[in-house]
Length: 577
Image (tube, rainbow, N blue to C red; front, top):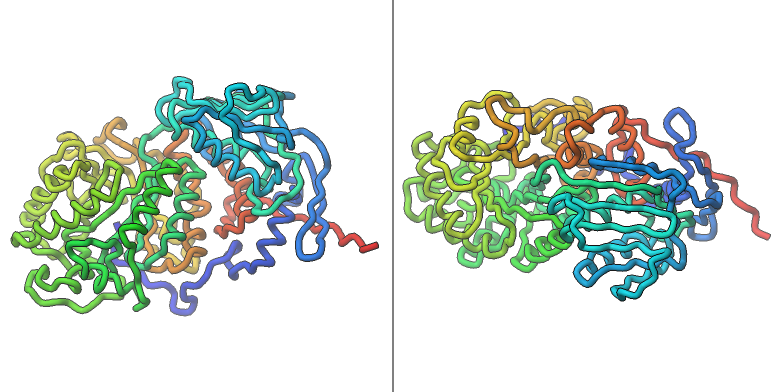
């Protein structure tokens, strides 16, 4: 988890982080780059064209008018998506062009995914793309989504592109959803524009058969150190879904703030939720807020995993209910960044009544299978008392119908059926974790020196921690989750998750700067077969995501490791007649 952070450089305090790391982009910056990028006006850093077709941007009154070279040839190769698909069979000459006559057809059970595809494509293309469930819909000029099992597991999908139509099949809506994200990336970068731009909108011909390597692929957002509202969380969900990540872990409680309403203990938010790092106003989610996040995520096939961190990291709870403090004295609110000083008393029955009430309410609001109990950095709790605490809390979780998930410090406790340990260490040897695996535990891999998205990209980065070292894009990509820990069989690894702690992350722009471009690197490790992992191929495909982010107005770190395209000089304005 988080550990005692190093301070940010005093001469360069955290602030909004832009696309290039020097300033926050203005609306005009983003609008201008969106127009150029949507038009295909790109070159790589060495000045060579980024694609086979070029275009010109002609500014008009109040907006950018984009004119492209006409054609029906795809500008994206079939395998140039993130994460890289398991199987790609291109078919030269079999490209499919979207037109004003294109229809999206789906069976009733696939209607929601068809509607989502249409909603993704309509703003930029300006095409009507009507959705129909009529079985008599014409087969030509049609994108068909069908719940037909292609034999690729519960999240796999098959995508067939021919000159006359596109067919996407999967055994489940989740598989269709992942296929929709692949189809989206096979169109030019302009598809991310929020306003219509010219095409052509051409998909490359061939077949993709795809399925994930790991069942759990996720990221974590710490909303306790700095609070982020519902809309900001939903935007993170969108980033996860785009790259086929399927779990969002919300770190809901810590010393600096309690962020989820609990009806039986209302002061947890009324008092404990009113602070954050640096002394800001804090905030919290009502039950309806939380339901909205869960529902939005589920529609995009992302499971919310709530964390109530116990028995340490509890100062916010103790400020609300002093009787929970070991000495019965209400502590002052905490707005710093140290860790390990607060805890619930493992030897008081009131502690377990509190835990049962809180976990029971959170479990009732959460349809997903996991309930995260934290368990890290309880430095002031003796080892035997800590073990007794975990031994009592794990059955409480099981009693709610959920599976225990906790940081790997809970490893020495008695085994709870199905429990999952989230490993955030930085060494390949951990005998306690290996022993827990032998007793039946599974692992979620989050080694801090590979997956912690709050770490700086380089020692010179403006924001972030450095206690686990700098994590550039290649370091995030070049490792194997199934082979990281000694004496742990690959089959015990459920997947991986990338935590973003927010001691120094204060805004949506900073969230996205820290997520991108490392999140797609970790997503590829979680989704794609091990034998497809290749840094040189990955960084080329990653570079193509930059124009998409810029077109959508999304900030990111322009890592020097990646050959990002750059906008070409715009064509001169056409004189008005």
